[in-house]
Image (cartoon, rainbow, N blue to C red; front, side, top):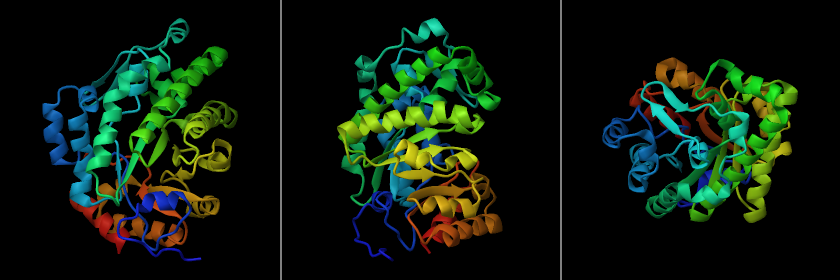
Length: 346
């Protein structure tokens, strides 16, 4: 059934999360507030540290709103970082310009000493940002909160940074299975409370980013990706039964199958490597989000036009949120973003 008739002020992304289909899908981009925007670079230069930007509500809200003002996306996503969770739990987190996050690698004894949800107040500035955004956003724009999935957050806590295939975390999980399970459980409980606070402050939906899920084997994926995310979803829904949640287990491949049912998420975020036939199969179960290759957005021209067209033609007849298959990169030309939106919206 075509249920694409729309009202001017409805939040289309939330409607898609409920299973609705639009002839022209709503669109936003992961990392849409970022270094490809000159207005972001200007604020970033004045903000001091990256974490200072995340923890200063007025500035974080301004940055979140920049791509909405410029492009009119259908959703704003809270400007923050997945590593505010270990920061709140008592681990020192910093960001090196051009290199990414740095943490002091955690050992088994230190895992026992992590702060629990009694330290959630550390993230009050982020929750204040959510409140500011809901007041300032146009009525029709959805507000998305987020957190990192426990597996992905833990990989950074163990290695102290992103590494090829996140081998340090995989090794740690084999050598210290029970301790690692405890670490993921602590992150899941803290993350659930964090998402609940975002939703209570005005977020319409939340996304759980599992950026490193693709490095795990099948059994490990079930244990370290599926079960901790299910715990987050269950805890959030105990407090907010109708909470809308997007799960993004990047590069999960065939393991995308069953992820929605096992975790309870409403929508599957797909990376660009997912075959169109498989994406359509997953869409038969509910809403999907994705999945343009961010490099096509850099390239522009024929590569961009064909990539957008393939997704619209292949997935546009079901519940779809148009997005990238991962975050936009700093070298992306603004004109190409404008072209992508023009193509999606026809």
